[in-house]
Length: 205
Image (tube, rainbow, N blue to C red; front, side, top):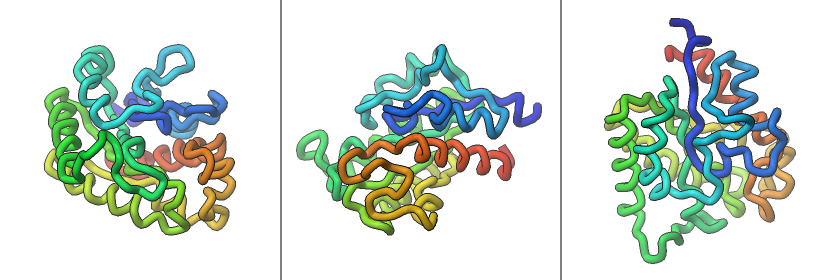
C-alpha cells in the first residue's frame, strides 16, 4: 500500500470543520490536494468536524462515527472550546485540569479500541496567547504525553505557525483578527492543510 492508497480523517471542532472558510481552502481539502490522500468527507463537508464541540462531545460521538468511517490516519484537534481567550479552563463549570486531561485518556482509549491510528495535532492559538502561545503549547504537550500511552504520535501545527514571519499576536495573515475571531481564515486553513500534508510526506505512515 502506498501513501496515496491511504485515507485520512480530520476529527475535532470548528478548526477541522473549516468554519467560515471557502471549501477549497479548508484544511482537509488542501491536505488532499497536497498529499494525494483522500480525506473523509460527505459532499463538500467534513463529517468528523463539529463547530463548538469539546472533548466530551467527541467521546460520545466516537462509537457511532467510527462504525461508519475507518480512516487510516486520524488527525485530532479538540479542546480549545473549554478555555477562555487567556487559556484558562472554564467549561464545563468547575472542571479541574486533571479531570480535563483524563478525558483525553478516555478518548484515546476508545479510538485505540477502534483500531485507529491517531496523530494528536495540539491546540490552536488562544486569542490572548501572544506571539509565543506558551499556554496552548503547554496544553498540547500535556496531552501528547497521554497520547504516548497509546503509541500515538503528535505534531503541532501551532509550533510552525508561530515561527512564521507573518504571524503576530493578532494571528497575522492567518486570522482576520485573532482577538475577535478565533477561527483561522482561508490562509490559516491552508497553512494547517499544507503542514500536515508535509508531515505525512516526510513520515513513515
